[in-house]
Image (cartoon, rainbow, N blue to C red; front, top):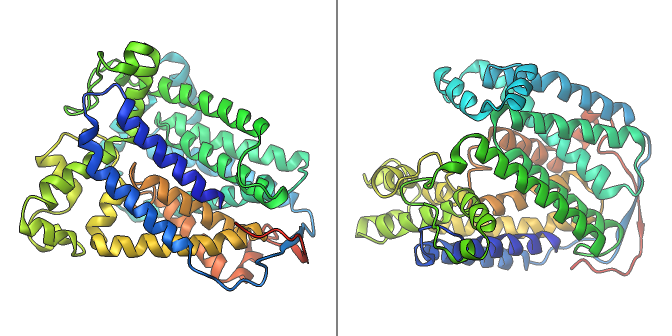
Length: 433
């Protein structure tokens, strides 16, 4: 199953980054978090080994799109164009024009966004925020569904379909530019990789990239890496030798000696993609394994709060153990706090088992299952890195909508044929692996 391969490569990338990065944190400091991460991955794998009864296990649906829904793509694209400028204005206080002026004048949209966000108390929930939260979540779900349908399933796409995907992607990129963040670029990249592999498995019965596609993905990945580096530098953070008091640039690191450019990039990547593993390791060592109460808390949902150790693992660690600055809090640390280690193991096992079922249905032509499988992949990606699931309201809304439509496919008619396909079966003698 291609999503398992993607997760393996992602965890290998993170592990290698902890070893070779030009940073002052040593590999041994990452080890407890890495061991827990890989252990949970094997729990996920065990979950995928559960047997499900599927009538189409040895045959795939021959999916034919029964009618044109070009007008639906146009409607969704127009909704993006109308909604997100309002969304950007609400969360950043800037118009699209001002965002572009700041971009080309060298003024940091990120700093402006952070100041406006803090001064406007946008971190506090209010009823006024609800339309923006729900709207962004539904539009994200529709974008992911459109990508699964057009990139993952359709052999040929018309001009309207291609233009719609481009427009929606550009609007998302504008959202990233308005906040000076790179997360949206990262999401676009992993969605592209996911849907390309879905297409390969669905249409060509392969579970990995061919050489031409690998080259395309590599080029896009390098371009987005350059955008990521530029975003960091535009904030002034690229000139800092220390992202936090714990994570600093090691000018004597082996990678820096081999290539100063690669050493600098590894330092920037480490703050975003491996600091979460370091935070997880320190939490385990200094909170859970330092006392009987800490060990007990590991097995109890909301253990730190119940046993009076502190409000949650992240707060305790960042206020008393290490300097987190504004680093992402890994989803795994949040889940451990909320469910305990046994609950976390059970959750990952169930998600692994569910992903097997989703994979079968996705390959058999279910757009709803494809969207949910993407979120399973995103969940596993976010475990050691950041709170892409637990604290991202638009992703949460998109997951809820995906689940509702997966459980009740008949509700798909509310989206005017976007999920409608005319299905038959075709014996392809291709077992789903």
